[in-house]
Structure formats: C-alpha cells, structure tokens
Length: 344
Image 1 (cartoon, rainbow, N blue to C red):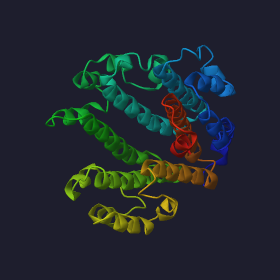
Image 2: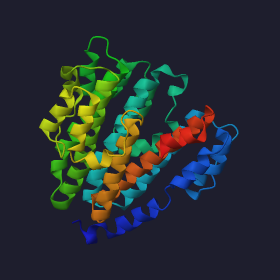
Image 3: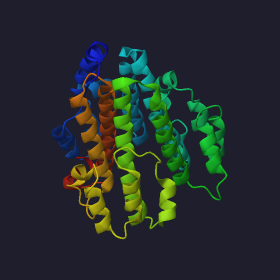
Image 4: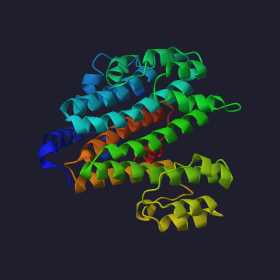
C-alpha cells in the first residue's frame, strides 16, 4: 500500500481534477454536433476548456490550432500535478514526461509532410520547455529527419534515432517504432530507482502497458503486415510482466487468428479482452480500454500511490485523443454511431 501521509494532498487534488474529465454522455453530445465551430463552442461550455479556448474564435478555428490547445491542456495539468508533488513523485513525473517527448518527436517526423508543421506546438512550447531538455524550436524548424536528429544531439533520443538513420531507406514507421521501444525499455530499467510501494506502482503500470502493447503489435504484424515470425520478434518490447516469454512466443507462432485468440484467453489479459471482437472491432480501441481499466483498477486498489498520477495523466491524454477524433469525424461528416464506436 502507498503512503497516506505522502499522498493524501496529491490524491485529493487528482480526484478533484478527475471530476473535470468528460463523461461518456458528454462525449456523445459533442459527437452529435454538425460542425467543428459548433463543437468548439460547446467545448467552451465546460469550465476547463472555456479557459483554454478563451481567445479562440470558434468560427475561424483551424485544426492545428485546436490540437495545439488541447495538448497544451495536457501539459498544463501535468504542471499542476508536478508543482504539487514531492521529490519522489517528481522523479516519477520526469520519467512519465518522456512519453510526451517521444510523442512530440514522432509528431515532428511525421509532420515533415505537412505545411503547418513549423509552428505546430508554438503555444505549448513554453510549458513543454519548462520540463524538457529538448530544443523544441530546433526540432520543429528542421527541414528533414536528419535535421530533427541533429537537433536532438545531447538527449537520450539521439543515439537510437541515429541507428535508424543508418537503415536502408528508413521510414517514418521505423523511427516511431524505435522511439516506442526505447521508451519502454528505458522506463522499465529506470523503475529500479523507486522503492517499496512506489516500485510496485511503476512496475504494474509499465509492465501492464508493455504486455498489452505486445499483444496489439503482434496482432497488427500478423493481420495487416503479414510479417513472418522473425520480423515480429524484432518489434516486440523485450519486457515480460504478466505476459510471460513463452506466451509471447506462442502468440508470435500462432498459425491463425483462432489460435491467437485462444492463447490470449489463457493469459492474464484474457478477461479484459473477452468482449473484443478481433475480426470486427479495432484492436487499438480494445487495447486502450484494457489500459484504462487496469490503471483505474490500480488507482482504486491503492489511491495513495503513484497510481493516482498515472491514472489521471493517462485518462487526460485519452480525453484529448477522443476530442480530436470527434472533431475530425464531424469535419468529415461521419454518422453518430460511427463516431461513438471510435471513441467509447
């Protein structure tokens, strides 16, 4: 169990912040709207977003601007928790922030093909830079991948990305996969700096996410990319928590989807994925549901621990992803049931 003394104030604050997260019904109401400007107008009705979008003209809002402001909100909440945290809690938050750095680098690399890339994170830059050693301006002003990698010299990301650069015709996917693999291997190694219940909280959260991601990546590799077993082993995160090494091997070597599903049912994640239709439902959604369930479970079991921070920050990030998905779906005129299936 965590420490009531060390976490009482922080957990109380996080519970209050959780109260501002949108509910399923509120997502559905937003999904019923017919235009992006109407979407932003309605988002402004919530106190949290009214402050973030205060200076924005809903009728003129651009996709990039809206996404920047939503991501700014993620950093803002991170900052609130960081300012309230003690030394050990900040140690975890610094480790967690690497997720945001990885996402930013991936966005920069994939965004090289888009005209609005140069100032994509300008409004979030000040907050981001407060917690990061990355020169965000240099990263986003880079004209190519080589320039981005050079801008990251002196950071923990330089060497892994430099290795990818030596591949024959490296693709955006190669850089993104390398960054994801790097983060989880790095975080798994760094968890050892925590002791007692904090070590358990970090191990549970990272381990569960790695297990779930390995299932997802193996599934994608087999179904969509038709990769052979040797190639699949290359993209697996070499961390084994509740999903044991022999189970991972069995999933990779499964001859068809029925065998794949049967193996999953026998793992620790079987009951979390039992409602997922692998042939009809996007497994990415199933994965997110599993992680959210697990993080909320850890928070309920031990609210006075790092699980409180992890649970909130994950939920906030998912809220932003859902809002961006709703806005995009409205923009392209998708029907309500199609939007709902993507976000709930």
